[in-house]
Image (cartoon, rainbow, N blue to C red; front, side, top):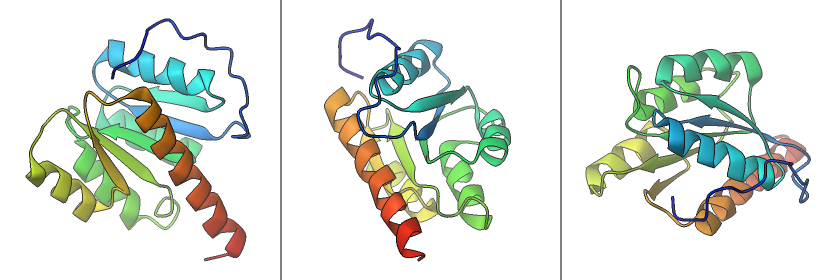
Amino acid sequence: MTAARGAPSSGANNGHDGRLVLVVEDDPETRHFLVDALTHHGFRTEGAHNGLQALEKLFALLPDLVLADIAVPGIDGIELCRRLRADARTRRIPVLAITGYDDRDYRDRAMLAGADRVLNKPCDLDTLLQAVRELVAKTREKLELGS
């Protein structure tokens, strides 16, 4: 991620109504940065350091969005997407996948597994936040329309 560290985690609302984002990232520094940045921009966050922990939190919390690194230990981000899409409780939750691999195969596999969007790391924080906002808004619209 490219942005200055040290963003306050006070959680100004910014119109997101405290939507919950599950951040799945095995690198502690990156995970903390993402959690802090999202919190600072009005999202509630929960972190997970691997795919198994993410699944447990996913079903317990039913977040509004999953932000998942593709290459996490155990159940990777691609399998996480598959399992999320296979369950009626979670299939509508959007997934924003991030990857450090600059390989089209990873992007394609993530999209086929059910990711709504894939971004390469490092990515600009503004780009990441825009993608999160768009996916959360799109899901909110779908739920309001009952589709």
